[in-house]
Image (cartoon, rainbow, N blue to C red; front, side, top):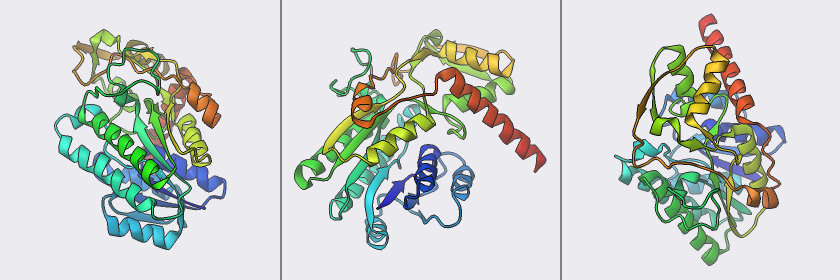
Amino acid sequence: MTTLITGGAGFIGSRLALQLLSSGQPIVILDNFNDFYDPAIKRANIAALGKDVPVVEGDIRDSALVTKLFEEHGITRVAHLAGLANVRKSIEFGQEYSDVNTTGTVNLLNIARKYPVSVFVQISTSSVYGQAKRIPFSEDDNPDRPLSPYPASKRAAELFAYTYYELHKLNVTILRLFNVYGPNGRVDMMPMKTIDAILNDKVITVYDEGKLERDWTYVDDTVAGIKAALERPMGYEIINLGYGSPISLNEFIHIYEELIGKKAIVEYAPAPASEPRITYCDNSRAVELLGFDPKVKINEGLARTWAWYQTQKQASIKT
C-alpha cells in the first residue's frame, strides 16, 4: 500500500510524509522543487525524512514520468498536494495556475484511474467559497464565484475529479483546507511574514482595518485529517478541513505582539477584490466522516510557531 505524495517536499506534504513513515507506511514523493519560495527549504524538508524515501524531482504534468512512478512503485493511494498557491499572486498568472492546478490534476487523475488506486485525496482550498453569503462555509454551498485564478483553478479541478469518479469509479476525496499554519510554514504566508515584520520593524499591510477574519488551522490537525481521508475511500466527497473558529487579523497580530514582546508597525489599506471578508469552516462533515478533531487553538499554535522560529534562528547563528 504505497502512497504517492505530490508536493511532498512542501510545508504540508512533508509533514504528511513524516506521519505516514512513522506509522510504517511506504511513500513516494513527487515534487518539482520550484522557486515559488526558496527551494532550499523544501530540500531541507526532504532531508529530514531520511535517505531511504524515494523522492522524484519532476512535474505532475509529465505523463510519462507519472506513469513510470505508478508502474515502478505500485502506487495504491494518492495524496495530491502539488500545485501553485497564493491568491494574490495568481491574479497576474491565471494561465499558469490553470495549467498546473487544473491540467496537472487532470493528468494525475487520468493516470490514477488506470491503476488499482483505492483513494485519490485531492487538496483544494477554502478560497473556492469566495464572498460566501452563508456563514460558516458549508460543502453544500455553490462555490461558483471565485475571486481569483487560484480558487478558480482549484474548483475546476474538483469538477474534473467528479467526472473521474462518475466515469471510472475512482474514489476521490476533495479536502478544502482553511488557512494552514505552524512550524516550518511557507514564508509567503501571514504567520511567517508577521514574525519577520515585527522582529525587523517592517510595515505590515493590514486590509480592511484588520477586520478581515481567517479560520487558522494548525498543520498537525490538517495532516491528521488528510491521513484519515487516505484510509477511507468514500466514492466522491468534498470535505471542509478547518478548525472552525475565525479571528480577526488585528487579533492575530496582537497574539504575536504578546509572544514576541514587541509592537507591530501596521499600515491599513482597502482589501483587494481577491480577499474574502471571512473564512469560516463548518467542519461537521469532517468530524462525521473522518473523525476530525482539531486540537490546537490559535494561541497555542502561534506560540509553537514562534518557538520553532526562535530555535531555527539560533541554529542558523551557530552555523
